Image (cartoon, rainbow, N blue to C red; front, side, top):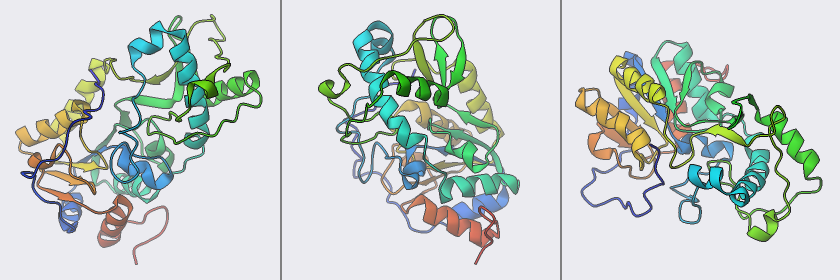
Length: 299
């Protein structure tokens, strides 16, 4: 089950310090069989904020829960108004060096797979194939009544038509695609129903309080078992949905490497945490290994 972020988790003084030496990351990739586990931090350079770290939104944003969404029409209206505005940012986001480097490593046979906790679809946009989207994707919608699936871009067009002139100024955009709007700003927003049956539409993402499909969890566990090492990119590992795979890798004797500027909940299980920006690290590793990123060769 996906839980709310642990708001009171604070790194303690017993955590191992971070390093600026990314050679172990290069060494692991050179050896191959690396499983990537990515979090919100890999998308910050694409303009999508992180919950934690510099400019993070965790202190001011509480994500919608599944129970609220299904039981309260007012909560659904608030969600869709905020998410509709946030989609204008998400829908225009483009992959950055981190996403492109991950795709390049995969093309060169250095990865065993990619698991992402993100819902932004940027790994696929960068060219990564067979990405396991642990928490789903904002790019898809599903009807809770008839099960019909559809595209978020199609829903966005319907919402635009139903809410002509809806253009409030948001206080910020969050990693789950939710814009910070007041109750006054969302009042009067019109939610559209399923075009097939008139039922309630939901983004195809795992809300807080909702269960990650067991088969998806097992798919990730199997990916960890098959990997030679685990590389965590841009995740604080605050919630168990990602942390469990770090702990599994450590139990199985698989090296765990983390690239994240801030301390993470998985630091004790890691061989090292590289405390540098992801684009800098992955771009540098790609150059060292002679792996062209987005068609650009190493210096």
